[in-house]
Length: 232
Image (tube, rainbow, N blue to C red; front, side, top):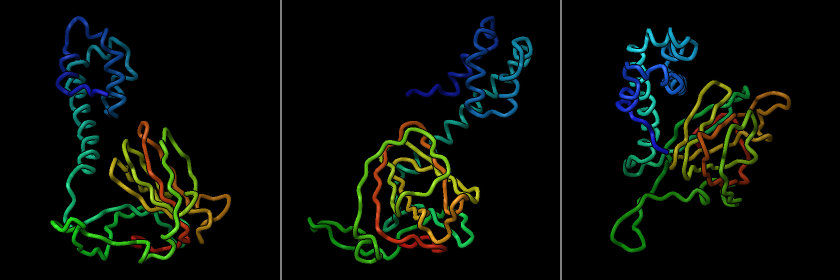
């Protein structure tokens, strides 16, 4: 997919005799970018009203498109930026005693420096199967997420690794995380979680793919727990 840059948008929306013909494009750009007053001006206005205000809207459309691109770029940059030595980050979707689900940004603890088999450089290592109970038996699932997944429990205690694309997770406390390629999340908000309660959203989350999103899911037999964020 090719994005239309802010300068190109501005040039395509310059005030001239073809402006009215460009209104459908301008409306779509403004509303897709969530441009606030710009969206109200273009999405609900008549052609005459929009034409009267078009000079301000040209600037607004370019600014909105630039902001939208920078937000998208931030997700991409975060996943591509080199990590600090010995720092492996993950997100934990955890559950408190009241049944609320939460998101916590975590860093893997107790990493050990070891020499690579080739002997020329080192690596940071932690074998979770040896140090965390229940992380020694797994199902490995490859999936492509295509759209929204309303409030639900995760099927099993699991890691979800984003291979390509982006998806996001919402928790019952109102928090949200976008998970671009390279991100991974640990979830144990299963139906067996001690804080879960049938007929409610206790120990649940919702999620959605931003376009097709390829994932690898590693499911464990580890029992879900309450109130223990960042367990690794």
